[in-house]
Amino acid sequence: MPACPEPYDQCVQPGGLGSWCTFGCQDASECPEPTDGDAVPFCGGPPNQPTVCMLDCSMGTCPAGMECVGLGPGGMAMRCVWPFR
Image (tube, rainbow, N blue to C red; front, side, top):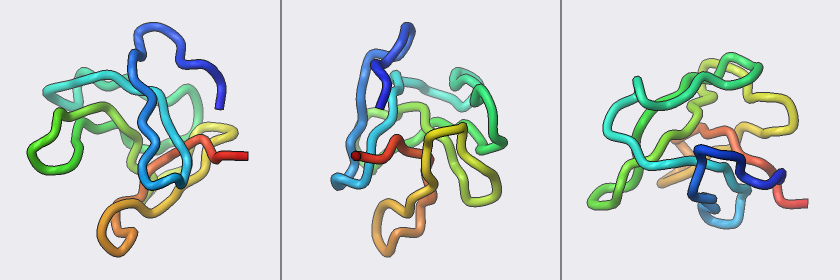
C-alpha cells in the first residue's frame, strides 16, 4: 500500500484483508471520486463508530492496484482495499 497522501489522515485495516486511506466524513459528497475505476465513493462505517470515506465496488471496479473484497457479516459489503503483500 502506498503512503496515505494529504488530505487522508487514517489508514483503515479491516480484518486483515487489506487497507485503505481515508478521512472522517458526514456525507458522501465529502468523499473524493476514485482516480480511476468506477467504484462509488460513500461515507459509512460500523454502527456506533465514526464514519469514513470508502469505495463501494459491488457494482464497479476499484482503482488500479486495489482489490474488491467482501467485508462485514457474511462478506456482504464490497469495498476497495490495498491488498497486504
